[in-house]
Each structure stands twice: as C-alpha cells, then as structure tokens.
Length: 328
Image (cartoon, rainbow, N blue to C red; front, top):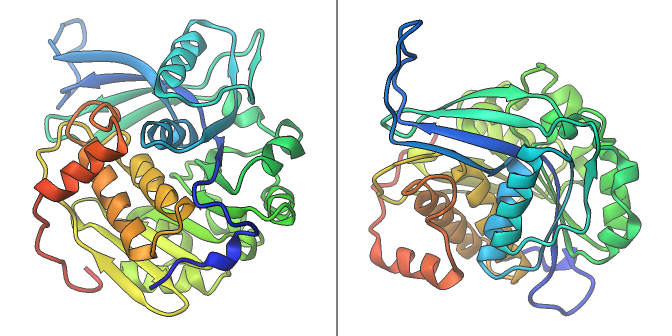
C-alpha cells in the first residue's frame, strides 16, 4: 500500500501543510462525572484555557512534529482569542493567515472530561461560522502542498467545491476531517465536494451518519465510492481503518492509560498528514496517526506530543492491542 505520489507536482519530501477551519478557545474541565447539585460546589483537578478546534489542534500537533504548518481561521479580538493565539504560537504554528475581528466573540467550547477520558461539549458560535472562501487567499494555497479542512461541518459559510477545486488547481493534495454535524446536514454538505478530496477522515460515528452504514468497513467503502482517493476512519480504542481503491486495512490501537481524549482525533489527523507530506507508504503514515492519537490521550489536550522523536519513542516502547475483527 503506497502513497499516492501523483498527488504532488514537485520533488519536495517535506511539504507545507495549510490547515483551514475551526479555531476555538477550549475551556477544559476534568474530571467531571456528573454536574454538581444546583447551588453546591464540586472539586475538579484541572481547569485549562487552551486553543482548540479541529484545524487548530491539527496544525499545532503538526508543528510540534516538525512540519511547516499554517492556519487559516477567524477569531475575535478578545481575551479568549488572545489565549488561543498564544497557545498556537507556542506550538510553532504560522499565524499570519488567522484573521482577528474586533467586536467578534471567539468561538469557544467548554470541554467536560470524565474520569475515563470521555468528553462532552458546550459550544458557542463565533468566528468559525463566518469563515468564507474570500478569507483563504491564493497565496496561502500556492505556498502549501497539502490543504486540510478541519471541522468542516461547522464551517457553514465555506464553499467546499470552490475551495477544493482552487487547491487542486495549484497542485495541492486535499484532506477533510468532518467533525460532528449538530445541524444534521451530513452528506448533503459533502456529496458534491468529495470527488475533489484525496483523504477523507472521520470518526466511526460520523462515518456512519455520512454513509448510512453502521459497520466501519461498509461505511468506508460507501464513502470511498463517493469520490475520495482514500478514507480513514478513527475508531478510538478499536484503532483505525483505511480504505483505498486497492484494499481495506485495519490498524490496531495502542494500549495507553487515557487521561483526556479531547484532541486525540485531531492528533491522529496530524500524524497521517505528516506521513503523507513526507511520502511515507500509507501504512506507515497510519502508524504515525494511530500513535499520535494514542499518545495525545495520556495528558490534557495534546501536551503529551512534543516532537517527532518523542512520537517514535512512544511507538518503540508501546505494545499494540489485539487487532479487532472486521466490521466490529
């Protein structure tokens, strides 16, 4: 299973990645197994204010893994926006294409994390919903070799067809990470854009909603038939699945003690895109993706991921879980 080398029109082996989409301020609270009785107080171990959102998280992890990572997003000129930008800057993300708008409230989410690492979200609209194609300039696309759209279901004013076609016209590979669609549009949002997508990435629940198929393998095949060159399905503790024109392959999960799964899916995407950008065979890129997703869960947000060498060290030191059966 080899990388689709025809996607790239030059000989570079380490290429810049433009992440477009969700940037939010994450307020992470853990552990919370139930809400306090009204009028009373419960104690928690951590309350953190960090950058978040699918595109922002992926760009941060990419930068920490050594990629040339740039983010296109919209946030407000407020305290939450200041905190999110500072966090991204510390990670090494290029932020010259992030637009800050006076009077706009930064998109924000309260992430409630249980003792087992599972998450629930309270989301407030903001800049994500205002992002349009006019904010994504040709110069940014021309400087990239991979254009990734993160959290596409919440980017309601983005014309996916036009953006993907423009990216392809500049010789870019394209990828999409779906996110949960609280508005319920699902395939109606994506169907016309999928033929211009090289890599479609979704978690198991999102893939089922998009395809109408509950079994991950059936969902991957149904989505592949819609036009993408490859479909990767994130399955949490069950690992991941990759479908290409040639085959469907399953990749088992790593065994870890989960602290917080908040950025695991976005870290998975970063590992996959890094491998693709460095022209790795897809099975090796998927190994990086699974490892990044697993390592991420061992600390809050994506703090456990610090470097590519650290990720390789994790891969060397960890045993894999027993592979799950097809269709589970």
